[in-house]
Image (cartoon, rainbow, N blue to C red; front, side, top):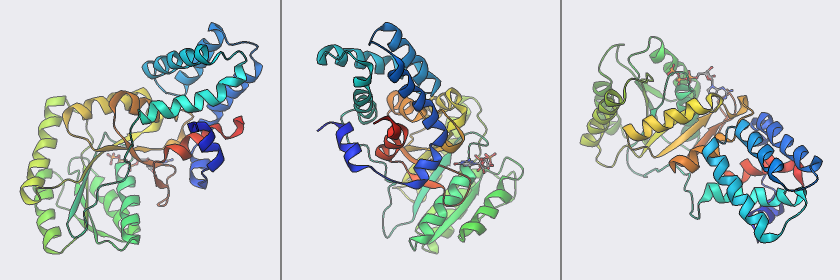
Length: 318
Ligand SMILES: Nc1nc2c(ncn2[C@@H]2O[C@H](COP(=O)(O)OP(=O)(O)OP(=O)(O)O)[C@@H](O)[C@H]2O)c(=O)[nH]1
C-alpha cells in the first residue's frame, strides 16, 4: 500500500495541525485548482507545479528534484490526466521526507540523569518561547526542569526567559548581563546536578556573527557542558522561524556547519503560507524537524509528525 493510501485511510487528526497549517493549506489548494483546471500532463503543467511549490518555500533545488521524480513516475505509470497526479504527489513528498529511513523525531531523554538541551538560532526566531513551551510539557510529565539564561548578550533576554519560566512553573538560573555564557552554563549545571534536575534547557545568544566566532562560542559551551556531563548535551536544537523562508535555510546552513545539531524546531508555522520549508530542510540538510511551533500560546508546540503535516495540507484534495 502506498503512502497516500495509508495516510488517507488513517486520517491522522490533530486540531493544532489543522489550525496551524491553515495558511500553508491555501498554497496547496492552489495546486488542487491547477490540477482540476488543466487538460493534460505536459511541460506547462510541470512548470506551474514547480512555481507553486517554490512559492510554498519548498526551495528550488528540492522542487526540481521532486518534479524530476514526478515526471519519471508519470512516464512509468502512463498517467494522462492531471488529477491522477494528486496521489503521486503525496507519495513523492513522503519519499522526499523519509528518504527510505525512519526519521526519529523524539527528543533524547535519559532517565535518572540530568539532561541538557541547548537551543541555538538567530534573534527573534522564537527560542525563548520554545524553551518555555517545552519546559511546561516536561513539567507536566513530572520532570524537574531548570531554564538557564545563556543569552547574556541581548538586553531583555534574561528577563523574557524569566517570565516564561514563571509561566511554565519551572525554576530559572541567571547571572547578570554581560557575563560569559559558558560560565553561566557551568555554574547552572553544577547546581542542576546537585539538586537532581531531570532537564536543563539552555537559551543561547542569537547574534549571527561570522562562522568562526559562532563555532568557537558554541564549542566552548559544549566543552563546558561535557566536562561536567560527558553524555550531554542530549539535544542541540536549531530554532528556525518558518516565516523567514530562504533566510531560515541559510541559517540552517551556517549553524549546521558551526556545530553538531541534533534537530530543528520550526516555529511560527501558523504564520506562513510557506510551510514547505519542512521538506526543503530535510532534503538539503538531512536534519530531523523535531518540534513545530503552531501559535504563541504555551500549548502551541507539538512534536513534528509528517503524516499529520501532509494530511492537513492535502485534505481537500480527495
Ligand atoms: N505565531 C507564532 N508566534 C511565535 C511562535 N513562536 C514564537 N513566536 C513569537 O515570536 C516572537 C519572538 O519570540 P522569542 O521567543 O522572543 O524569540 P527569541 O528567539 O528568543 O528572540 P531573542 O530573545 O531576541 O533571541 C514572540 O512574539 C513570540 O510570541 C509560534 O510558533 N507561532
